[in-house]
Image 1 (cartoon, rainbow, N blue to C red):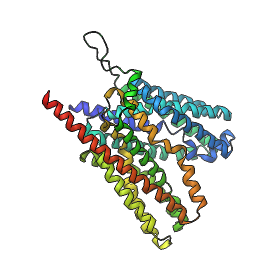
Image 2: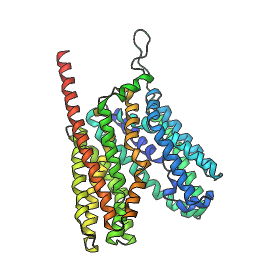
Image 3: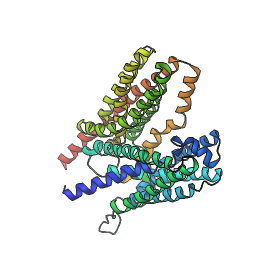
Image 4: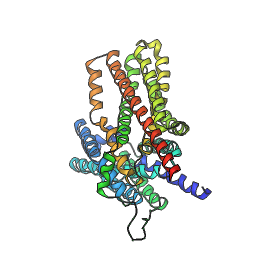
Length: 424
């Protein structure tokens, strides 16, 4: 590979990392600026919850159609449209229209961040390298998203304060995020090549995607097994988010210590997961066997939380275990989309496979936060959190089995492909 080609691929990966984070800042604005949003749009707590419900429900509906769109249309055009339209709608959001309009904006952002963006971005990352590079590519993409989120956070928090916080500070923050989206959209158009169709001697486009091709993906057991492993991975990821309140409620960790632990979990482990997970995954025989090792680590370190006494004297051990468990969770989370390569799907339906696996992976977003929250509410003290940890262990066991099955299928497929090449 020529040096210029490597540079171009690196720049594409960088812009995909920036885009994969920047485009989600506006829909998830309430996570950082909750009170300011309530004040700006005159919403109640329930109404802010409605915004995320609308966004989440439309997201779930559009994951699979988004995979079809990624296969049917140019990824360059889809991603550029997504980023620029999200940015432009952000400028309108900065005028703080009535709540029904804000609700419609969140539904619109589900279209621009999932239907026309998510699977297309995954497809671009996947096609940047060979099968042997998939772990590294998705790991670096994950790292890029994490670093972008951190950098944008460090810029917008002082910006919010400089403009007086509250409504005016929030408006400045929204405008900043909107500008970033538009600029990233322009860079996407410049850097990501527009693929020209390959035409055969009869003038027919080769490997052209047809709607019926989607059903090829649905009939592939490997795709559903990868989806099951991803479903388990994301369920554990959600469960891992309850470690912070667990440290607070059970070990009586102070607010400053909790803040440090949260930063460590949300930024440091997130970034290290992308950096290390991808490199380690590529050194394994298959990405699925890397997931097996990851699930084993999750089982082991989650079980430690089951046996640690709920005493403040055990706080250091509980915190150290969070780092160890988080290493496995974030490393696996960084590369689980590289499992697409091991399903053996034809290149022209990569987007559909990404959409189907995304549908399986993020399905827990609809119900799991409520289920785990109720488990903790109904079982005060350490027992409620132990139910969460039991759930995580069960998911890890199922994910481990699914990954083992996928590993064996991948090895068998590669052996058969090698035999076909030899006999050709």
